[in-house]
Image 1 (cartoon, rainbow, N blue to C red):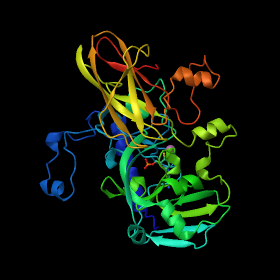
Image 2 (cartoon, rainbow, N blue to C red; image 1 turned 180 degrees about the vertical axis):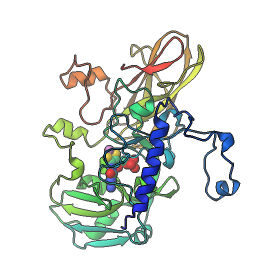
Image 3 (cartoon, protein in one colour; image 1 turned 45 degrees about the vertical axis):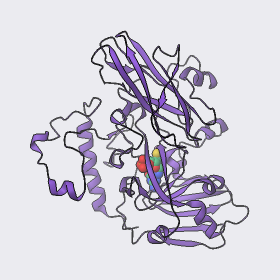
Image 4 (tube, rainbow, N blue to C red; image 1 turned 60 degrees about the vertical axis):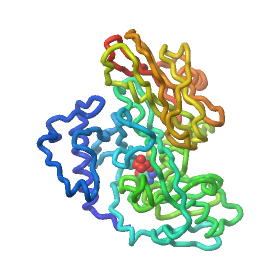
Length: 415
Ligand SMILES: Nc1nc2c(c(=O)[nH]1)N[C@H]1C(S)=C(S)[C@@H](COP(=O)(O)O)O[C@H]1N2
Ligand SMILES: [Mo]
């Protein structure tokens, strides 16, 4: 649990680099003055063999969310988006997974040998685990997405990284939380767990006991290696399908309790409207076209492969429909990857573009039969049918349009 300042300095330095690169960025933050051109960067065979890096010709990087000032008054970078426009398949490389870390905190530099996870509260046997103890228990590996509830498209967003870049999907390995809770012996009358992380703001949230006993994981593995420091090394809680904030990083404590407890992390999420509160947990079916997407350009009329990602917090994706005429008609896309429950699913759709202005969009349906709402449907539901600046309460899973102009340039269809 020791958090060293060196970790913070490293992060600030990296944060500053990210900001520098992001300024004036297009789809892929351009290889500008701040980044060495390929010919200037030596190809270090020894380093590439010891721990692989991507080709120096591949440039896409995470960039800070537009609406939140980064770096803030404390010099920190928060809410950093994944370059979905360059994504392929369904797994997000750990190095490109979005990051949401709260104000007043930094990325802790935790020595796994000193880290402990305590389970206590309404249990028969309070337990304290080392990371090695956790790794001795039966594990599972699952593919799941994470999405921050702040992941919402606005008319000002130029790229899919800006409009949808706070979702990512990894292969996670860990121990079912239910196993740890059964070992501790949950007492009758318990109804929630409160999770806590090891850094300053603690990333605490209250998770219903039913969910905790169902499919939550205490993870130590991410994409075939240890969970990265940005994502909670050495242990992180995974609450599949629930909005990102429930997935406590640097997990050090789980208290079994008999009621919902408000934590720092619920600030801004607490509401008396039960419809909004419901939306703040399980993420509805959602999808977005990643190619062609904002700031990309089609070279001219012809055959193209529309592709993108679909996901749902309740189930696997059953299907995705595509419209290339602004929502007047819809045709099924093909699912081009396995459709795992609560995971990104890749779709593809052959499109013959005739060179006229076209509005393209995707709409997903999950295995429960729930379909993504259009923005108009959501605005009607919330009694704001004529509000042009309508902002969906809770997580926003509305259908999102890209406008392909006659010159092939792609623009935000909400603008
Ligand atoms: N300990 C801790 N856990 C945390 C947070 C945090 O700041 N501290 N941020 C939460 C939020 S708001 C989100 S969206 C997810 C983001 O996970 P990621 O940074 O691995 O993408 O982690 C959640 N867990
Ligand atoms: Mo978040």
